[in-house]
Image (cartoon, rainbow, N blue to C red; front, side, top):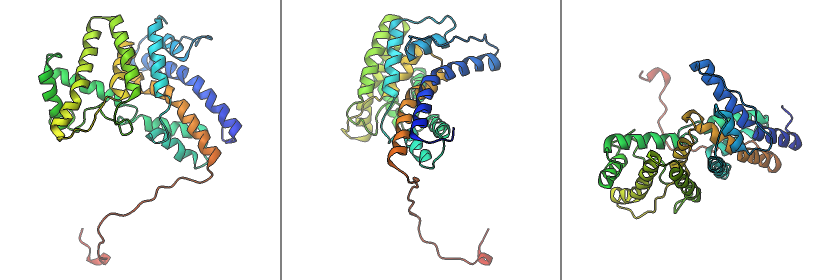
Amino acid sequence: PDDISYENVLRQCIRLIGQMPTMTAYAYQARNHYYYDKSLYIHNPQKGLSTSENLLQMIRPDSKYTKLEAEILDLALVLHAEHGGGNNSSFTVHVVTSTGTDTYSAIAAAIGALKGPKHGGANLKVMDMMEDIKAHVGDKRDKGRIKDYLIRLLNKEAYDGSGLIYGIGHAVYTKSDPRAKLLKRKAEELAAALGGEWEEEFNFYKTVEELAPSAFEEYKNSSKVMCANVDFYSGLVYSMLNIPKELFTPIFAISRIAGWSAHRLEELAVSNRIIRPAYKNVGRKQPYVDLSDRRE
């Protein structure tokens, strides 16, 4: 495992990409059985199936899924697979790889970064926020009350007091997030196929997406363009697929491990220096006080 030759690391990465869905599904089933006394379902991955098809059949007791369900999960996996070296977990791979450590340590570090609610757990924050909006607004079709509540969110008077509308805005995609557009289109198709409350829920998400920019404009007195990012609809999509929340971030890892692998290989191929951040003290200079004269 400590062999960091390019050929061996490539082999390790390909195996990890292929095995991550199975490890995730089995870990989820084992957790449900040993911690929550639920039935233990172990379905072997099937040759000839895509990653999304295998994942769905491994986590579901009856192993059944529709073509549309597999298509939309496949799209979500593709959209989350890579996002440049600037995202937190991919940069973590570069930093840890630069130390000369093994592949498994670098990927484990990336998973630790992804676990954070500001990164891989962002879609869970979106869903939790949306539930909070519904609880306080009542009527999901009342645009006036929804917008008022969004302004309260921005004013740090509601939900977690962060002043954020989760799932809206992105550091890179300032005009529009093409990933969100593609996922939204498929989410609408799946909601229509499921019907009932899922169509209502999708329309509620669409309303919040529509009203958020005007809420920003009113609160901040700015015409800056704000758009939904990929996290806004991904949690809704996973819920419509009946995927438990505990698997939302692991599914992100199943997808992003392809990008992490590419970044690790890039770091090994083009750099031979350890990454060390430069720090600059921005505090005020303090006069030296002798130890005997210092107060507690």
